[in-house]
Length: 216
Image 1 (spheres, rainbow, N blue to C red):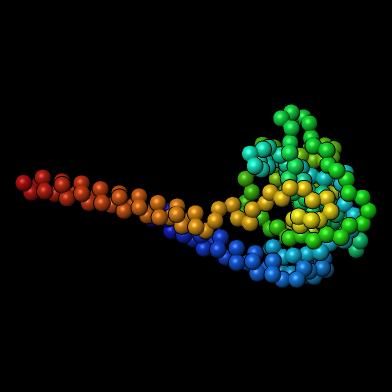
Image 2 (spheres, one colour):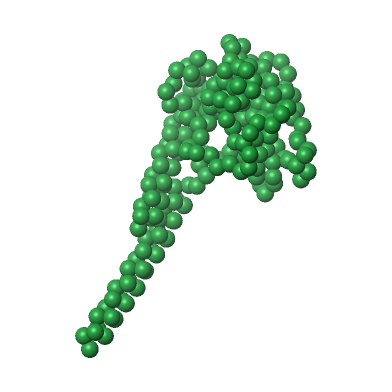
């Protein structure tokens, strides 16, 4: 019963997230300055202007898309007004040879792009060592913005901007708004409640049988 209630709570959380996403996507895009003043930036639409620092890109490991192994490519963008912004350009395929990293096509010059702020929900599960490797691009299990800021020796906006599909340097968009839809959580809850009801009925049947045998 507890697990069923937990699944119902998760379903409600996911519904709230999807409502917030719909609300934010209906808003006008914010400027960099406006975004930095927003207390709850998750899923805000933002317009950026600056230059990609392609040679300092990050490859987030273990990203499977359409059954293929690959990486999420995150490239810093140096704003014309100062500071770095991490732009997730999307997914690119990886090689079966783990020593071979994908080449990242550079985007030169000043670019104007639009994207959406991604704020992770809860703790991120990681595999293996999360220490920063030498050289660039860096292949990482998870993104530690503070450690990356230290490696780049520059301040970074704390959240990733997911690039729009038509943005400069965009790759395949592999993101999901939520990993599990509310309806699926509700379905799991029904399964747990059904299991609980079955166990209760079995318990009562056994208890009643034992009581009758003692009475006889």
